[in-house]
Image (tube, rainbow, N blue to C red):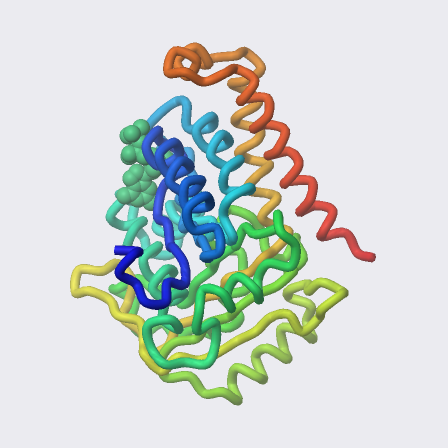
Length: 311
Ligand SMILES: Nc1nc2c(ncn2[C@@H]2O[C@H](COP(=O)(O)OP(=O)(O)OP(=O)(O)O)[C@@H](O)[C@H]2O)c(=O)[nH]1
């Protein structure tokens, strides 16, 4: 397939981190892509494990081990956090016990919004390269924090919504952390559908005036926004109401350190007892690899914390 491309731009990789295949094979594929096609952009859509739908006790190990290759080999990782998506399904969409199908429907809206500008004519992030260049200020800080609005349950279609305000709030975050606690290093806000440009400009000005989000101090205009006329689709059996306008924010926010702290904590609880390590060693892993993965994870968490400190 790659050989048949006339102008290959890059690769989008979809995987979860909690299981063996998504984390192990996913990392292997990513590392092989670096060797074979190092020049091309690699963007990962990675599902981070949540506590409510964990399928294995070793999910914290699988996640931290694969983070090492995501840090070293991916150009940008979109963090899709099952912990956050599960809560959104419960709290916004009134689904008492969300299934993977419910989670995936919401996640697919985020991915679809993100790739809309590559699939339909629009004015922002028309290529993977632009996406990477705009959002990644320094090499390691390439973990993207998505949020989406509106998230209106199907049975409540009268609900009106200020999508610009919502997309900056914690309740609509697809990663379990509070964007207002962090600093936005770079961001892309992608609107879809029937959007009035003047409304966006005035909502944005309000947000800035009320300091709803904090931007970095070296490039304060770093949130780019664009409109794509193609509105988001929803299927007849979808959980979200089909809307005329929506917004998806992909930000490189230092708040993501909160997700890493949660994962680190789970890893360390198991690793302190060296619990379940023998299952990995039997498969050929060295026990040193755990310590190294733990170290690079702590390092990336700290890098994000440092980036959030005011100059
Ligand atoms: N959002 C979402 N998460 C999923 C889905 N399926 C699995 N997960 C999560 O992904 C992680 C790994 O799930 P697995 O299905 O075991 O992953 P795998 O990569 O196939 O790994 P092995 O089964 O160990 O080979 C867990 O944290 C699950 O909760 C899905 O359809 N949607």
